[in-house]
Length: 238
Image (tube, rainbow, N blue to C red):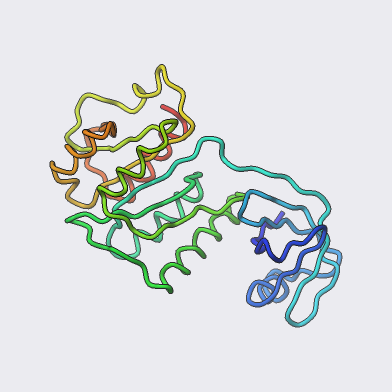
């Protein structure tokens, strides 16, 4: 059944409303009609089976039949350099699909993005919402403003229930599965470097804070590939 995002403010009690571009899409493209069943979600973990009760030119109204709540218990916060071109948009889509909870871009010497324009932020959120809709996810992966690498590392180590992981092409000994042999964590922070990799000084700084460097194998991966591979492996604790 179709699964569509509705802003939390537009779900009140047992009723919901959809307006604007989304209403136009549902009526004119998806051809929803009065009495049709529809699945909606609020991006906060709540998913609803609902029924359309009325349709006018600019708005769809409906009633909630039942609801459920689902937020990932094991949360991944991905701190990542931004790849070139439109590959970051692809990364957002795929990370949202596999279940990454949150993304914070990081700024390094080899990856200098320090902020997003309003238009970019809105576009990134739309991509994340679309991915949640596609994969029947009830929450929306959050995309934060970029942080300096060292600031990101310091923020990541505050919560001691999380494991901090940094895939590094020069790490030949530690595999990801070794970190999960005897410890139980509530989630993970994963650091993905820019094209060309992290500078040695950045690696030393991360290690000094207790962030684990790991190997993802012999091949050198692109930024977005490393992000997907590392996140998927951590989600499956392998």
